[in-house]
Amino acid sequence: MSGASAHTADVNPLGHLARLNARIIACEKCPRLRRHCRKMARVKRAAFRDWEYWGKPAPGFGDPEAELLLIGLAPAAHGTNRTGRVFTGDRSGDFLYAALFRAGFSNQPTSVSRDDGLQLSRCFITAAARCAPPGNKPTRSELANCRPYLEEELKLLKKVRAVLALGRIAFDNYLELLKQQGHIGSRAAYRFAHGASYELPPSLPRLFASYHPSQQNTQTGRLTTKMFDEVLFGVRRYIGK
Image (cartoon, rainbow, N blue to C red; front, side):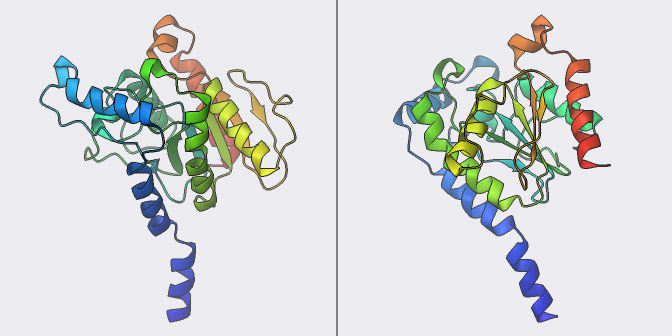
């Protein structure tokens, strides 16, 4: 019994993820981003004036046994930077979590705060950048500073079989990590397009791509509910029911 327990402890990523998340939350690598997050937490939006903003880097969230890893761009200044959970408290999150619920990856279709009871199943969500950037545009160096955190998450989430990149920046950032690791020689063979899917070198998860569920995309019809559902259900078929 003791041997089995020790083995379980070795493969259980919960403790390692908790320690990684603590390091992410304490990160101060990018002064520009930290200044912006703190400023937004002080200024606040009028609708959220009674909130105590999170104002820190946002860790990943989800099932440690995940088979699907979603990679977004960065926290929203009055969404994740307010609530402390990725894709929580803004229109992008409303769109995303409703879709995850329809596809069977979550227990509820809404995400409004860290203590709202939301649980993900077979799915983990992270981001290319962990701090809200001015104008929603992290710099290349800021993305590079965050990339090691994504690398560690992928090492800890040992059951991931599919990666879904939400938007071109997340897509390119993930491929850049694979290039740095020596898994691929060039990103040129993998072109971003909504609904694209790529088989990567052996032992790597399959890569899927979608437009980012930003208001700019969903309100203009560039990304519709039907389009996003098709991608998610395609991922679901790939990893198996």
